[in-house]
Image (cartoon, rainbow over the protein chains, first blue to last red):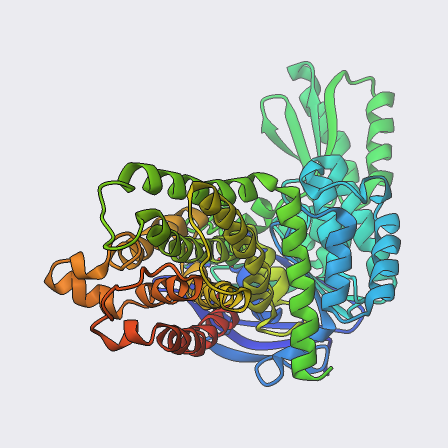
Length: 324
Length: 265
Ligand SMILES: Nc1ncnc2c1ncn2[C@@H]1O[C@H](COP(=O)(O)OP(=O)(O)O)[C@@H](O)[C@H]1O
Ligand SMILES: [Mg+2]
């Protein structure tokens, strides 16, 4: 089967570090693949190779039907890239940035301008369109950068950590923007350090560490391996621990455990529905609780479950600027 | 689009972007224009009377040297601009776009000609104020400025290459001084090369900066009558020798720089 992105055996070595160690990727047309991994896992390296910025030491790939090594120019015509750090020109206005990119995609003068205006509108940047980008907030820069990546409506889009560094509101906004994009049929490869983000946006997730795939599956499959969501009840008095544990046992998929002195936790699969039922049962039993929460597994939980160790950034410092 | 047309269109887009930046950050321009004024004034008044030019005035002699030195210094901006684009990450964006692979560099070197035109104009005015005069016709004078600009353009390709090699703007500023100071001082820019000792004199005589300085002095009519003919070929044929360097520098450094741009991780 041939997908919008097909990569086999990608290898990239730096002096002492093997950034990619034989990575295979398969992204069917119109789907979203999340490359999930901690700092230094090789996410940026993989995206840079697929976007023709870096030459792999070994391996091959086709992107949107074009061979990466044989016809990189063709690949560049068919992709959009938004790197880990917003690559917009601070001294240019938002409009000038997008207009320039449109011209460099050879849309033609009138089309580039129209497209720039339309994208600014769509990304909620019209009010700031004619201000230099250096006056933009982090979230606005990110949106502008993403707008830059889709100026030519490329069939394949690469987003490298699109929400890293954004506050929760900026992150939610960005998720909305990305979902809308994907709704239009774009194939998307995105990288992230957050399991929740991959869960929200991706059809398929590849977990990588030290440049190698360590797990692959849908969010549900991964969560099943990790233990999925857990419900956590913290009661106010030690006497209430046991009743709370019994309630959790009834609703959970596994055994409820006493995590800390007054906290009971258990895996749960019914999501918010089950959560409400638990709340109702606690209410009914008149147990005084300090906190009840649904805790989603994080990248750390995934790593713990898959590798037995927590996700750790590689010893190498994250390079900044161009390389990232 | 055909390769050459695409190169022209894309370079124009990049050059336009650089010009917008010049307008948005006028501080840079102010600095670029003030330093040549400072050089003219410092050399004219500090050394003006201590360096004797047989049959002529030091100020007349000096201006050609300052012109040459300033355009060579101006090339640093090309390297700094590229290093800055790289540091800010926008270079990655350009490199992932289906644009001509030489356009970022061609556009940059082209827009930097503006700096050189402006600084030559400012220096010429300052020079006229302190007593420099053109003693030739308008055609020769225009040829003098054109030759300086051509040399500046070629040299900005050297700095474009250096700018792509270094990791940051700070490094390029320091690295370029190490190249530019010897090149512009071990030359006939500020003192006649005959006044320099042995090895330095030989270096100065074959230094292209000396040739472009000599050519400018000839074309502006700033060589006093009765000055003995230079003893080496490069200075006897300063215009030709300068043009050879212009072509050679571009032929070597433009492909080096473009190749570096393609491969830069
Ligand atoms: N230009 C470079 N030179 C040397 N090592 C690098 C370079 N770029 C990345 N690396 C190393 O390669 C590994 C993977 O980096 P990267 O792909 O940036 O990871 P991620 O994006 O997942 O954080 C890291 O160990 C990093 O330090
Ligand atoms: Mg990264």
